[in-house]
Length: 455
Image 1: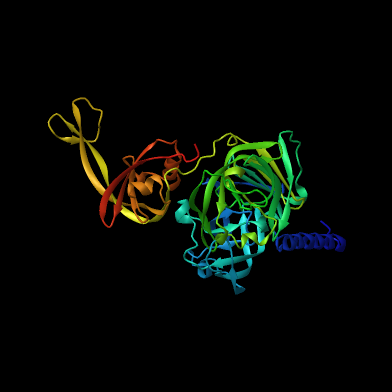
Image 2: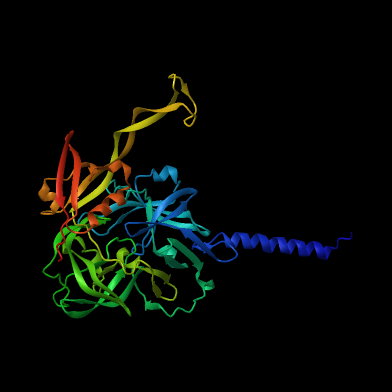
């Protein structure tokens, strides 16, 4: 075979083109879906209306909250971040968020490798926070190592199927919209890299236009900032409660209902609403036109398409849409707090023939089964009462913050996930709750009924 100079030159050019495509394809400082289809699907967990996705950071597999309310990714302190993730190019900064506390110290790090499915960013900034109080895992009952938001949404079209628990990521310039007659499309506005929509709410027999932050990192349905001039204020039926935990501490306020909440043609009735006390939302109100937040308990009722490049969000109803808006009728907030030793029965089945000799078979003629109960000690999650609403049914029964809950209605709590236990407090009013707790090494039992304040 004769090889000419021209053919060698062509081969070298092809190699150079291939090499350059690899270098430039993997040197991006934004998220790019690295496959031929330019799209990928990722399964997620839906925990207390929050989306938890797998994220690989510098080769380490982690779990992150998908939060439209944050800009740069944040890693929490309970990892040894510097050693485990090998973060570099750091500088110390201070972050501020919801809550009445001070700003929290963090390390800002550049040039980290983030991978979500086939979506990769090789030069991702992140913040590493070392405040021991900033740990969402105990309240979710699931390990969560960080939060991610704007930097993912700005680069890709993000489809969230709450009904199937699937996240679909597509390169923005490759996304093709499908005709959807049952969808509603709303315009997005941005402030500090956070998405806002304009909509309406009916309350106190008035239609009120409102501007809301879309906050997929909040588990409530709706937060509104009270404003007498605009007519945004709680009805007479409300109670004071713990609303959540922000970057700068806990947030408290009123819980109530609004008559109707609108997203164009979609109407949601008797929607849960929270009115955070002004002391806890000073930072959030820096956007003076903001009237509150639209969060997970409403978002989960739709399959959602976020397209930040075109400033659009598309909504389509799913099977969650018709669910009633329920709330915690007990007054108890539980969290995972370490582990406790649980004595469990471990039955050993033995088989004996009629002469009393033990054999291996349980089904042979002339045999009898002998149950030989044995017990073992196992480490199981300990669930603690971390918030207790004043004058709630649970508080009136004598329960206290700090009590370790051993059983609910005679079922050991170690048999359940945290969210399964919490759902017991969302059942219908009149439901009898019997709780056994440990307090100062003493086991105590309390009983109360769930109450519906809004009837």
